[in-house]
Figure 1: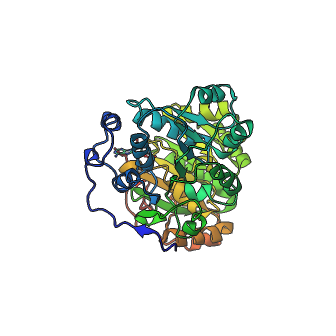
Figure 2: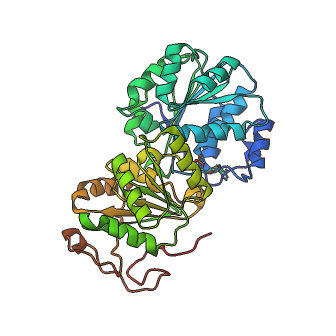
Figure 3: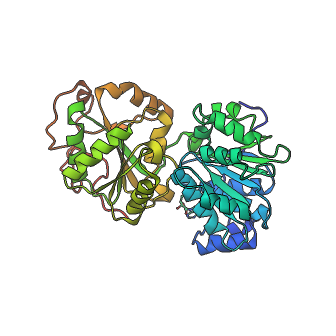
Amino acid sequence: MNEEIEILPELEESEDFSNLGLSEEVLRAVLEKGYEKPSPVQAQAIPLVLKGRDIIAASQTGTGKTAAFALPILTLLKQNGPLRCLILEPTRELAQQVEKAFHVYGKYTDLKTTLLHGGVGYGKQCDDLKQGVDIVVATPGRLLDHLGRRTLSLEQVNFLVLDEADRMLDMGFMPDVRRIIGQCAKKRRRSMLFSATLVPEIESVAAWVLHNPFRIAIGGGTATAETVTHAIYPVDERQKFDLLVAILKEIDYRSVIIFCRTKNGADIIARWLENTDHKTAILHSDRSQKERDKAMEGFKSGKVEILVATDIVSRGIDIMEVSHVINYDIPQHREDYVHRIGRTGRMNNEGDAVTLFTASDQDFLKNIEKFIGQKIERIKLDDFDYKWTPILEEVKPQPKRRNRGFSGAISMNLGRKRR
Ligand code: AMP
């Protein structure tokens, strides 16, 4: 581990927002939003960013990381000027969400924030850049296009945020991210790395980005949200879809995300669900931006109760009402498990996560359990006509107990009404 990194102990109790050193304008927006107390990651990160420190912050999903960097940055930027802050996001949906948050938290400042991502025209983006912006929230590909066209310069960027930092620094994004950071100010640049899954190795990978950083670790960096109940449903490969339909019938869901491994798989599952009278929306990277926006809007507004998606929505997407996450396909990357199930149980709400598990998924499951440091409960659905598979043998019989909706063998609260 990098020896320069200082680690903060977790605070016993969060302070009040008004004691953190935020500007009046930012404080007013926060209070108007109805936040009463800073979350632990906010209570730790805000004073450090205000002091000008670089940070690496690991905090469970849905714990208010966006405000943890947005509020102090808006405070420090103070007034309209050149482009000084760059936030990099791995997906368009996340970039949209974070840009919106900057507008909400910055509404009483005259700071300008704009969004740069692919899949849409350049017109509005170029107009915004020409008029002058203080903060850019971007995905790497489109940002590089703009740099190539010289429609913006990063020379004065001295606040850099890598959100979902482990994703931004993985092999796929790293070359683009290096090129982008290479164009930001070097002297006096403050850099911040945020994610729910920051394993210690990331610190050496990120050493070139950071200067003498503080490390904030809330929940250990690999922890699943405490408010999410999760379980594994072993099943024969050929019965996966039937089990999914049976689970959907049993649970008292308000809003559910079903994760599939591939885009094609997501399309097929969505089509099959439509055939079984479930209204669905689909979100993956082969859909047009219009279709992606429509799917997200329909799901967020509650018009559509089921969103079938790939890992494109596994990180960061904040929809308070998601009651259930179903991993139709188990995630192949262990950290995606934490992110996926973190789409429910946000900000201390309760949520349930279900993972279908077949014999060929054994290594993935082992890896996930090692990563989160716990064995996940195996559950067999009563009244489902299982075909035999060796993995079912491992499921211990559950004590019979009534649990709204389920006729017995289940210890999860899948059937409960919440909130
Ligand atoms: P994030 O982890 O940034 O996606 O935030 C998760 C959710 O928590 C968002 O809906 C925020 O609006 C909300 N939130 C952030 N900070 C607070 C806070 N201090 N009190 C209550 N809600 C908050």
